[in-house]
Every structure is written in C-alpha cells, then in structure tokens.
Amino acid sequence: MYAITICFGHGAVWALMFKDGQRAIEAFDRYKITSDNIRAIGTHNDDLFEAADDFGQTIRISCRAVTGMMLEDMEHSKLAYIERGLHQARTQTKANEIANNDPVLREARRQQQSPILQPGMFPGPNGRFS
Image (cartoon, rainbow, N blue to C red; front, side, top):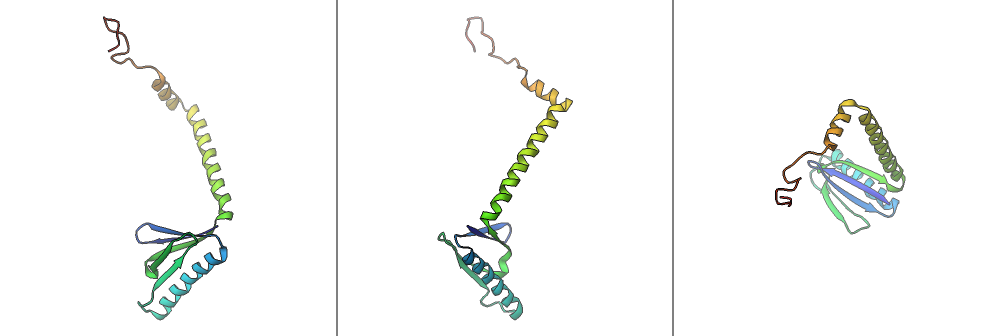
C-alpha cells in the first residue's frame, strides 16, 4: 500500500492511496513534471495537477497551491509507526517512575486519594442519606 500526502493552503492535507507502487510513483512524478514545467515556462495556464487513487478519490489542484508532497511506502513505514508507539510507551513508563519518586507529586497524589467529607456522606437524623 502506498500513500501520497499533499499539503496545501493553511494546514489542509489530502491523501491518495494506491495498492500498486508503480501507480503511486507515476502520480508523484506527474506532479513534479507539471510543477517543473510551470516554473520553466512561467505560465499560469495548465497548472492543474490531476490524479486518481485506487479507492475512488480523484483530485484536481493547482500546482501553485501545493506546499509539499510525500510519497510513502506504507509497508516500510509501518515499522516506524510501531517504533514511535513503543518509544512513547517507554517514555510514559519512565515519566511515571520519576513521578512516583518525586516527593511533591507523591504528596499531591496521597491527598487526592484521601476521602473528603461531603454533605450527605453520613445519614441524617432520620437514618436516611440526604
């Protein structure tokens, strides 16, 4: 599985998904050729990049609007996502360990765990809780 992520405008992102790597590379290269031709010729005509993915999405966008593109081989990047998740889990575990040994945080946690007397905790004169 391959993905082309297209960034444009102010934080807008689109993603095209491809089952076949060759089709993804062709779409990615087609944008580069279109974009390079626009810069070389300096024309404002025909600056549209068009592509269709394998999951029913078709885009048509001005090359000038695109601020960045990424081609991703998702089978290879899967391991990177797993490693990031494991790193986050190890970081969280280490943070918890440090927090458990911090006297200020330990005291704050202890105070949060102690019961607080509130109205209605004890039965009233008629034996019922309010």
